[in-house]
Amino acid sequence: MALFLSMKITTLFILVCLVCTSFVYANFYDDFDITWGDGRGKILDNGNLLTLSLDKSSGSGFESKNEYLFAKIDMQLKLVAGNSAGTVTAYYMSSTGTNWDEIDFEFLGNLSGDPYILHTNVFTQGKGNREQQFYLWFDPTADFHTYSILWNPELILFSVDGTPIREFKNEESKGVPFPKNQPMRIHSSLWNADDWATRGGLVKTDWSQAPFTASYKNFTAEACVATSGTSTSCASGSASGNTAWLSEVLDSSDQEKIKWVQKNYMIYNYCTDSKRFPQGYPPECNMG
Ligand SMILES: *[C@@H]1O[C@H](CO)[C@@H](O)[C@H](O)[C@H]1NC(C)=O
Ligand SMILES: *[C@@H]1O[C@H](CO)[C@@H](O)[C@H](O)[C@H]1NC(C)=O
Figure 1 (spheres, rainbow, N blue to C red):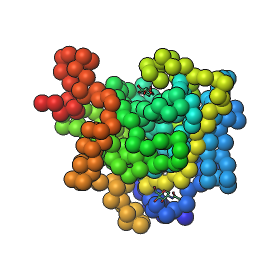
Figure 2: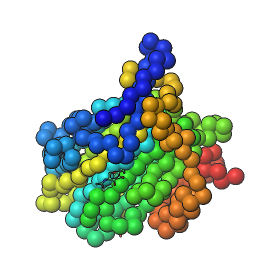
Figure 3: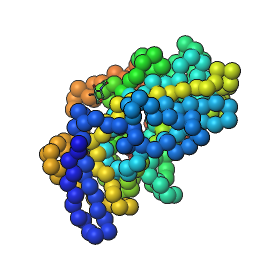
Figure 4: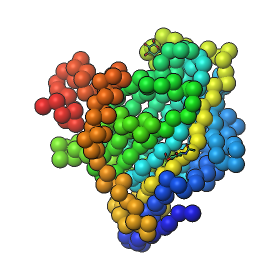
């Protein structure tokens, strides 16, 4: 199914670079574990579909079996429909420990007909505060849409249906830490956050609408899988030879698309929140 090339870096630090083409069939049973929710998370349809649900007693969540050190991952999500106010569907990659790294998509629900907010953040060495928020140009509850993370040594790129919406560049040269040593797992959860999610917490979850359900399908990955604890470098060779994603950067058409999204759909950007940073913006904001 997949091609493995293992490279012994040391006896303790072994990293397997696993390259799946987008044609490789992924199965939720193979790639993920339901981690909490007491039966509210389900793998269905022979492993082709995963659903999470939330009711007044609990939400639910899952995580990847693998830890990845750099990855290009696509997942199709269909979010909680109808009155989803107060609910949050989080889909993210994260390492562990007090100086963790994290790459976040969070979908903040809303009243029927009112727009979801796609909230994004990047944590490096345990420090986040890098929120950017967007409206979407479609109804994310009507159908499945693809949400992607590209994480390589040059950048972190968030994309929606193939359209890049946010780039977090490796700016270590400016003293901004970049995630590159700590393997991350993919996580997702559906939970109640009506103290802040919808209109800043003004609109509460309507439990008469429960259970709330979000659905997932068609996970694909081109990724370096860390197989024995922490690994410090990523094997760049692969038997299939297809590791272009490991050095992928934005071309001019991608840059135009990001500008289009940011101009038309971005509703919050920490890099322009002057009240929050009276002493000057964080260095990665490139505000001069
Ligand atoms: C919900 O709808 C209101 C009214 O249109 C909007 O201001 C808000 O940004 C929307 N999204 C969330 C998650 O609050
Ligand atoms: C599954 O995802 C891959 C990669 O994102 C995409 O090329 C393919 O069209 C998707 N398949 C379906 C049935 O949506």
